[in-house]
Length: 383
Image 1 (cartoon, rainbow, N blue to C red):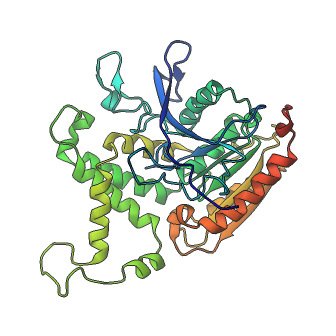
Image 2 (cartoon, rainbow, N blue to C red; image 1 turned 90 degrees about the horizontal axis):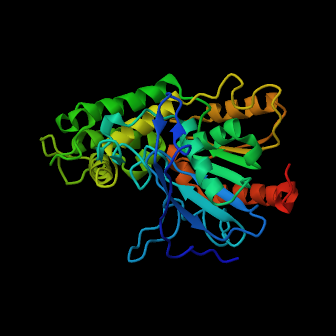
């Protein structure tokens, strides 16, 4: 089958506005009304049994595939979503929503607080991955879907996949967590904290109340993004992409970007601040750090679930090393779960979940086909 794009797409918005559709968050506070930005690709079948939820990573959004009218840039996982691709839109109905706490259409710290008429800023409550997934259940209900055929995502998206199973196992037939962890390690928390401190050290941050000011904490957010990009790549991929190549023929003997890798990091940082909110970066990284489904919390002892798992890791990923994915599988096997582990021999580092398209496609396609044709959920029956 020839692979092609889903074509022109449009972001949609779902708001659950009134009590009891406020969310009681893990911190104890209520949040509402809540809007979720989302996109869908493909068609929902008559029995509503072919839905797959795609979860995005830290800096992602609901625009996972296709292009917007008048634009050329494709969605962040366009290579995996579309006719004939891993998430075949001629077979599946694919959904992707922007997380709460985000800044690309869903309710977050840059949204207007209905109580004050001004942006929330730091009045926005601290959220968790469980809160993010809880909000998504309202969207899935709105779409009339009782049980998802699959939930898939990489990095923070993988955390949401695991949280779906932990919180709503009866609503998921299969789960594909990619390049993720069952909890953040001290090193992963440390990288997030350095990024947060870079933002909060920017004088323009103003304790999060910068929305109505001329300046934004762009320098701090850019540094946070630069730190992140270093962790997303591997030593080998950086050597192959940049080595010690200079931007000019000679050293400048100034504190300018002499090396190509310096210029690349500055470019990535400068571009990131054009599309992302600094406070959202703080809130989302904190949610990732709080995430912890270890010690039996993923599938509690005595709790039955028939969710099938495909866990994917990458050999050169040092941000979310493969031993963390192996720990997910170990916990699943202890509970007698159907879990398959695949480690891809990639040199791209953590970015591999966005780049190793051919191998991921082969694995995901086979796994989803087996789920789709082998589970009673396809026949419209409860499992």
